Length: 281
Image (cartoon, rainbow, N blue to C red; front, side):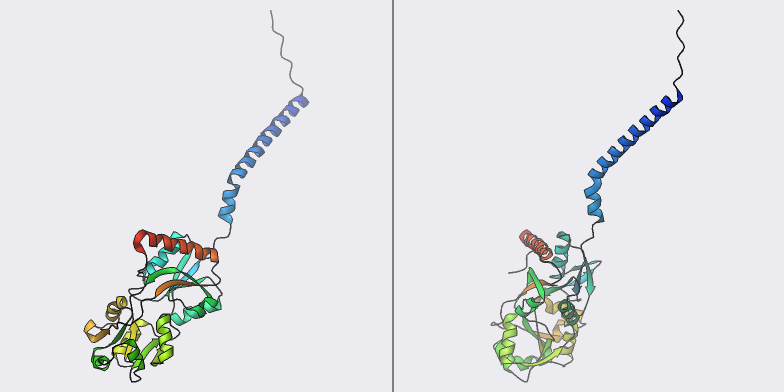
């Protein structure tokens, strides 16, 4: 028995079927795109969101406290401070800046700026935020040129040294030596000579006789003398029993740095301390 020949589909019916198939494919494509968008949308939004501003971490070359190494810092205060930024995932870049300019920058409060290894002073909290301590100094000593040692023989305490108006004390302008020593200097008014120079140049001034003595942490003295181009025998390091305990050193940031960023940095500092790399207390 012969099969009946297949009747061709009318043209308008075939065209209608093709349209239906195109619409179905388009709808499936739109549904797939919507699904992919729902999945990737939050990720793309995060990627395209404005990044957190970078903090400018100001430093001075001051061994053994802070020394630039590659893109970061090492040293007693520079190392743990820089690592706190990395551990807290706070964007940061370092910038070498004089101490006086650092203070002006924080007071101007025009950016996200931080200083390293600062002693706490109540008046500075008016324009900045302190972190948890990153280090604690040993009690400070008096650094003098070896040839001047005899002039300190009759002094049993740091108070005696400050009362001796014949001795010129070299101090850094606008710098804090810690609350106890700052207070003692205000009370006894030693014969002070202020400078904007950093510690290495201050050591040179002492050696050249431009001033008679300066205050310095023991852990810094030997390194600073060598870095300034001298020998330990060129100086005398005098320790007084009544010298106040060493002060804590903090990260100090402008008020523009948000409180939540400081909290993240504090958490990172604490985490480092808990691992045994804490500031000496």
